[in-house]
Amino acid sequence: MINILTVIGITFLGMFGGQMFKTSRRYFLPSLATLYAATKKKEKWKSSYYLLLMGVLSMGYGENSKLRKLLGGSDFWTRIVYGLLVSIPFLALGKWLACIILPIAWSIRAGGFQITATKDFLWEDFWRYFSISILVVC
Image (cartoon, rainbow, N blue to C red):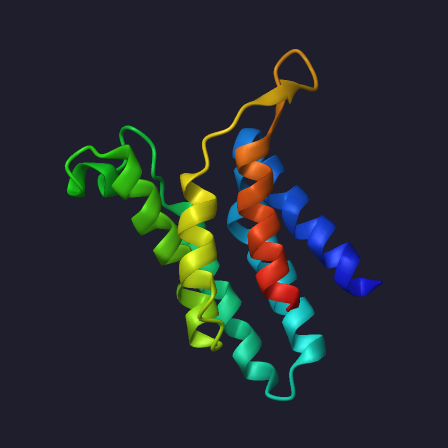
């Protein structure tokens, strides 16, 4: 049951942080991942690797980001590299599949639907943060 709640929580915090409260994505999501991992791991200190997500999820990858400028303005390569950066904490924990899943998840360009007058449910955000949550609980 805690696995399901963690998946829902991480996915929600990521999506919510994409359109509204950036702190939920930047700080609460990595904190939840760390707390979850600390309850499951024998070596509890390794769960602190998820705190590295705070730095990565705080940097931008949009049109005006330093990363995009560094990569010559390419949206495609910016998303691939950003997905690889997000995979770093997972790689430190031996979850090598993250360096395949997360660049793909960040490359997804999908629509969504309107929830309120100013907020949307975006499928691309769902797949990104759902992927992170699955990697955390597996």
